Image (cartoon, rainbow, N blue to C red; front, side):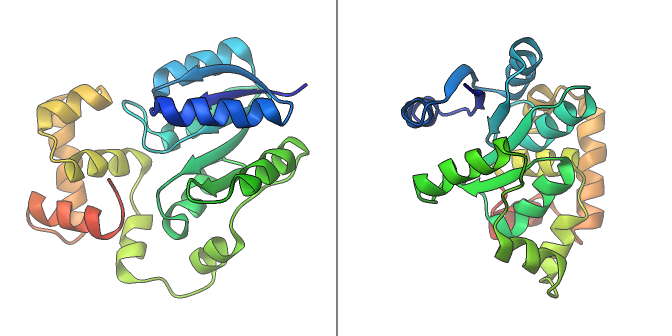
Length: 207
């Protein structure tokens, strides 16, 4: 029986996922509500599959994926997120995930993804990947694609109206480092104020 670790900050989502996976014959080995705890459980439990959301407090999902991949025996990783696939599917692939499923998708898609990934395949929305890799991308999408995972995490905090102090505490950074990231974001996104950063984040679904 394959065992699965769920990392999602919404208790109702974790419960629903656990019930669905149990009905399909999978063992939910553990649950975590934030990134650091999820990493700890992944190292302790050594699950076959990690099911992870992107919008996690503390370490976000992309950073969790990167840290899991940086260690030896890496579990298979499936992202389940409400963020737009056209923007985030490729980022997840680049970070090292094996699949991406929208939270808006049918549960059959989720189970199909779990089955495929545990059999050694990848499961990404083809239209999102082809759009991201082949088609000319809109200006906002190309600007977003150049951000590092940490810059994206800071932008998410800004989108929520967080102060420098709050961002520093949430991401375990110093206030000075947060200011540095904000300056980088202003330069990379051609913005002149924090309000413009918030507008960009809302426009591109970063929240």
